Amino acid sequence: MALDKTIVARIATLARIKVPDRDLESLAGELTQIMTWIEQLNEVDVTDVEPMTSVVHQTMPMRADKVTDGGDRDAILKNAPQAARGFFAVPKVVE
Amino acid sequence: MSALTRLTLVEARDGLRARQFSARELTAAHLDAMAAARSLNAFVTETPEHALAQAAASDARLARGEGGALDGVPLAIKDLFCTKDILTTACSRILDGFIPPYESTVTAKLWDAGAVMLGKTSLDEFAMGSSNATSCYGPVENPWRRRGDNRPLVPGGSSGGSAAAVAARLALGATGTDTGGSIRQPASFCGVVGMKPTYGRCSRWGVIAFASSLDHPGPITRTVRDAALMLQTMAGHDPKDATSAPISVPDFAASLTGDIRGLRIGIPQEYRVDGMPHEIEALWRRGVEWIRDAGAEPVEISLPMTKYALATYYIIAPAEASSNLARYDGVRFGLRVPGDSLDAMYENTRAAGFGAEVKRRILIGTYVLSAGYYDAYYVRAQKIRTLIARDFQEAFTRCDAILTPTTPSPAFALGEKQDDPITMYLNDVFTVPADLAGLPAISVPAGLSDDGLPLGLHVIGRAFDEETMFRVAGAIESAAAFTAEPQR
Image (cartoon, rainbow over all chains, first blue to last red; front, side, top):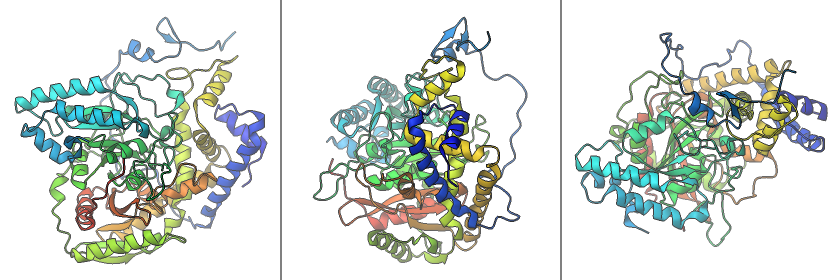
């Protein structure tokens, strides 16, 4: 499967990674090479095979619905690149 | 070099308990060794004051006869494990300055057992790589050199800093994580023991996520017994990790009886890959002879899906990574690069913060999960993963453990094998299947290549049967009697 510049630009937008136009061509080449190598998986007959969703067979554990942790706002905000009045601060999103 | 850095982890523990030396002396000897070996670039953060304070507390406990299982034992921690109040970066610029307000479960268990932290070791950025070359702190050097060739070699990856530190005797043991081979491949390249337990045996809580269904924390040590001892403390059920196995942890060291008589050891024919160097083939043959001499029975087995394991991995791991790494957006921690809008800020931050290999994998993962491609790539890969696990289940009806080489080559020089991403990916051809199937596996140093570099043999066990895996690994370790040491 060949990935062209348009597809790479679309994926980069989905992934929220800015890719300069000048890099699209070489990136498309690298990704195409990887995806072409991956094409070998089409040889495998997967009829009636269940997709693996859990490596080790176990049922998801349940726990009581109660608060066991929290109240660490200030400790958490310490790592924020920008915080204001006890919140994470981001560029304005609503005019 | 101090005699104290030449001890095994078990010898050090026993010496501390017998008060032959203090935890402070043992820690200071390792801090000195670290300072003398900074050119290896194995550590990205050294924590000497923290280490000496922990060592002093250990000495007090040991004096009262209250020492824990690892009391006073100095360890190195891969910089993928969150350590409370100590810089944790995954060797990525995007986590620049991140000081976790919490401790990973595995490291918390180590400190509860009295272990001492020497510092945080380098890795490929977000554990994505096989050479430690993608760390934002620069490459790590393997303490080994080729005979008659002074070019620096890679330590393997992604746990390259941990493997180099243990090989150069800068730490008695180190933590690693293995997603496609990231403990076992660097252990093989550096001539040390590296093991990953069954998926679910060690909690992933507080370990920075790469591919959650594949990430396995485990120990890197100089002997099999040391690995058993370290895993003993690292393992155990953790309610904070929903995939952590709620089962008891056996006494791993007790399995090291040296007696493998009657065990059937599977030799998978599909691991004889085209172009395998003769020295790897010869090492594997020697391994088969060793286990036969020890009274075990080698049996030919077939794992027909092996050839598809790497390609399967390179869909599933990037898919999970693209999801896990979505959290790095410049809002809650790490790097932020401003932009005109929120989206522009996200895009600028992630463009500047992630390295080339990480971006490549996020883009592949985003692609295989995107509308119209999800079934063709991601679901198909998950189905093949089922078939790979089924291969092992069938093989284990005929054998008790599986023996293979760890890697298709010894350590290479920095810059070699970097013609294209796939050449680098092929390093993990023998290690990836056990990650996909979640099985315990260990690399044991077993011989030297023609140019004097260490080579590992690889034992894979049944799920939650680390004991048989350790038992076979111990027998190989005894037979190999690997005593060669790196030049630096």
